[in-house]
Length: 150
Image 1 (cartoon, rainbow, N blue to C red):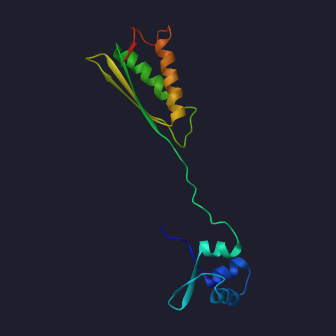
Image 2 (cartoon, helix red, strand yellow; image 1 turned 45 degrees about the horizontal axis):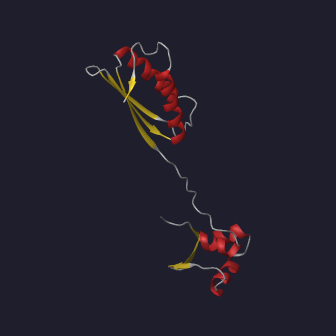
Image 3 (tube, rainbow, N blue to C red; image 1 turned 30 degrees about the vertical axis):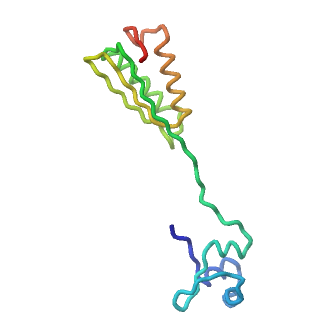
């Protein structure tokens, strides 16, 4: 990672000082600088130290991601399509668009089994899992057949 470096002229402009004053700070040791050829370069952290500003730390955002696989047995193709549409629609609305949920659905016709793979933010994933649980345990005709969780 490279740090931003300034010339003596740039530092003088930033601080509203004369170039000779900045060079004097360098010679007296008040301002750290590196000599490259015939010119001085001042690191941003050294300029911050001179002006008394705290060095700017890069912002670190902690982000957790969870992955969930939901397997549902006893689901025919039509029910899998309806359930998949519901889950995908829910995942694509009312969530943080900067960190969207990623959802994939797979239906195995031979085994009458559906898998829903969810990747994303823990809170949004939990919300989607609660919705899925409510739909699967409710008395409604979204699913034509009886559905069991595995």
